[in-house]
Amino acid sequence: MRVAFVSETTVFQGATGPRTRLHRVARGLAARGHEVTVFCTQWWSGYEASTTQDGVVYRAVTTEPATTSFLFRLPAFLLRYRPDVIHASPEPPGTVVAASVGGTLARAPLVVEWTGEESVPESRVARYATRTPATIVTPSELVRTTVRERGATAENTRVIPEGIDMDRVREIDPNEDADVVFARRLDGSANVQSLLLGLAELRDRDWSATIIGDGPKRDEFESQAADLRIDGRVTFTGDVPRSERIATYRGAHTFVQTAYRETFATELLWALACGCVGIVEYQAESSAHELIETYERSFRVTDDQELAAAIVEAGGYDRRSVDESFDRYDHDAVLQQYVDCYEECRAESGLF
Image (cartoon, rainbow, N blue to C red; front, side, top):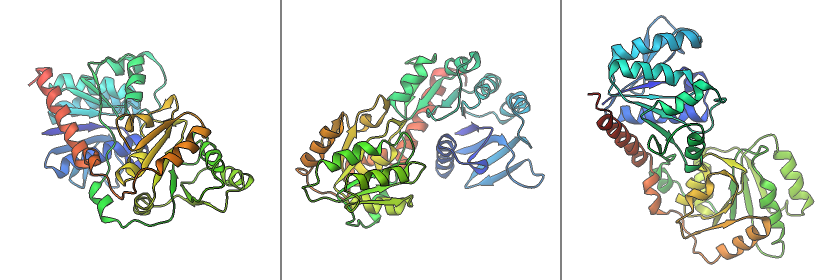
């Protein structure tokens, strides 16, 4: 299959969640033998019109950042390429309009990746960007609902979750550093205070906790742990690489998710795959509860008292270092969902 990705800016010009997700899908498709070209602003040195990385061709639509020129030139580039499907970012929303025109000319359906982390202010163009694609892919039902509120429909939206590397989970040895783990960027949405208050309810019990992540609120959370007199049992590791996170999750018993906002709870997914019991504090702007709705080894709570009780009750579950049921979230399985999505869009479009 010939797939055209459209993203004015790529991970090579600055990694963001949406760009990283598109990058991962493009590389995965190329590794499977599909022909993949990313139409973008030039980020490589020299005068070549294109460059290749990990089997993916990057084609410069403009040589310098210039959104108006990029959008004006894009349809002709797509027409010449003749892709089987176009996969675009909605940031800026004019990209979807230009990609749609290119798709009409090239007779290729348009798929848009909408993660919920993009900066897409409300506008007439933004609403058009939710109605035009054959399919809008979101990582969670939470984001899907948001996109539908902006004009999309149930018929042109679908959920494809984030993926994880299950082989890597199995290969990394567990450590025994903590009973309870939390992991996230420590910003205003992290809500670590709920976990700390819950742990403080359990001072008379034997436990240890590890908080992974860094950010502007770290000092505040460390001070709160000290004020609650549990700082000797709570370790703040800062930001650590994926291999260390996996080792910690595999050795831990319980993972706690309390963040106010999460378009997809990636760290929770990794922890569940590593055998952790999941405890999720329900938040209206978080999709974390979606991962545990049908998962037995989990608890959904609404405040720190319920969280403390859930940590105790979680002790009734055995320790595991891997949960094979999460193979369905392996990168390869998730990539197949994209391939299926493309094929369905082509079949329904009648354009070929």
